[in-house]
Image 1 (cartoon, rainbow, N blue to C red):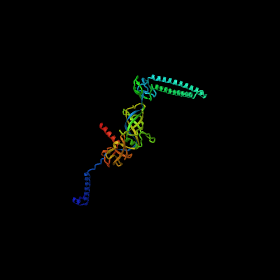
Image 2: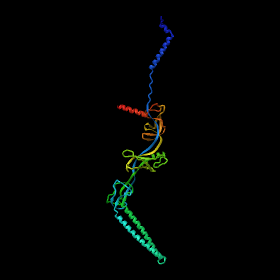
Image 3: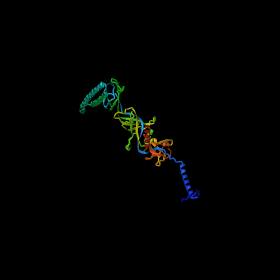
Length: 402
C-alpha cells in the first residue's frame, strides 16, 4: 500500500526548497539571455589594396619642337647673264655636282679665247727674251757686250716670264668664270621650285637666287627647355647635349607625327645652348634624327619627348592612391594587422598613371588604392586586392545589364 506525503509536510522539507531554487535560477538565466540584446557584428570598411612595386623607370620630358633640314642650300648665280636652260624637274632628288641651270656662256667663252691668245703671246715674248739673254751672256763674258746690255736682257726675260704667269692666271680665271655658267648643285637633296624663269637676266649683283636644295634624309629637331629642367638634369648628373660613356643610357628624343602616332626612329641630343635666353627663360636644345623615308618635313612643328633620366629600383604607386593636401602628400598604408596608417611621402616625377615615391615607402608594402576617402589614421579595414574588387564590379555591372 502506497504512502502519500501531504503538501504541508512536503513544503517543510529542505529538499523541496533546493529544487525550487534551482528551477528559479534556471528560469532567471533563461530570461536573461532572452531579454539581453544581441551584440551587432562590427562592419569593417572594404578597401582595394595593391602592393608597392619597384622597377626600372624612364623619366621623360615633353616639349614642342620644330623640324629643320640637315642642310638647306640656296643655289645662286655667280656670273651675270641670261638664263638659257633648266636641266632638272622641280621637286625631284638631285645629286651633288649635277648641272641645274645654264647661263648664256657666249661672252665668257670669248674671254677664255682672249686669255688663251694673251698667254700664247706672253709665252712667245718670254721665249725671245730667253734667247736674247742666252746670246748676251757669252758675249758679256768675252767683254763683247756691256753690263748694261746684260742687265737689259735679264730684265726683259724676267718681265716676260712674269707676264706669262699673269696670262696663265687670267686664263684660269676666265675658265673658272665660264664654268660658273653651268650652275651645279653643291649638295645632294631635293630641289625646290625654280626662282627665276628662262630668259631672265641673273647675276650676283641682281637676281641671283635660282632655287634651293634641301637635304633631309637626316633632320634636326630644335626645341627649348627651361632653366629648371637644366637644374634637375644636373642634379641627376646628366649634362644635356653631352655624351657620357660611363652611363648605360644617353638622352635621346622621339617625336610625334601629325596623325598622333610615334615616329619609329629616335635620335641623340647633340647640342644644348650654354646660355639661357633672358626673354623666355629657356635655352635651345637640338637633336638629330634619321629620316630615310622623308616622313618628317622641314618646317613642321611636332611634340618632342626627351629621355631625361633612368631610375633603377624606383618605388612607384598609382597616382590615384596619393592624397595631396596643404601639409603635403600622403598614402594610407595597410599594416599586417589590417590597421591603416596615414603616411606622408616625398614624391618625384610622374610616369604615365604612376608616380615615383622618393621617400616614405618600401617595396612590398600594401597601400590603399580605392576607398581611402572614408578612412582615418588607425582604423581597421577589410583589405581586398584591387583586381578582385574591380572584377566583382564588372560582374555586377554585367548582371545588371542582363
